[in-house]
Length: 111
Image (cartoon, rainbow, N blue to C red; front, side, top):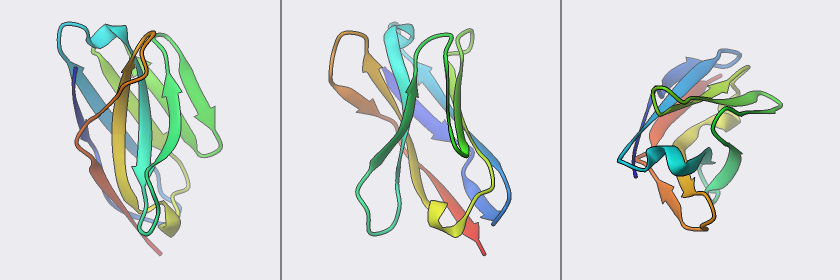
């Protein structure tokens, strides 16, 4: 599976942003999709994952999935400067442990 994240950019604190991840490949629909982020000085961390037809909500973060488009979204509300970092989408095939990462998209939050 190939993954391409997009939608990052410069946002003012308090704003919102929606990131997108397009999955391609013949078996794209056989994967659990997710989002990770890496902020300056920290290791990559998991935000959450979502199965087909599911939705993940945790605090200011919502992950949803458009099954018809093989697209996964990460909505972030009330962005703060500490949210600045590179956001990566991920895919893990059902029943397997290997995690595919796409190219990251940079989010910069100004105070």
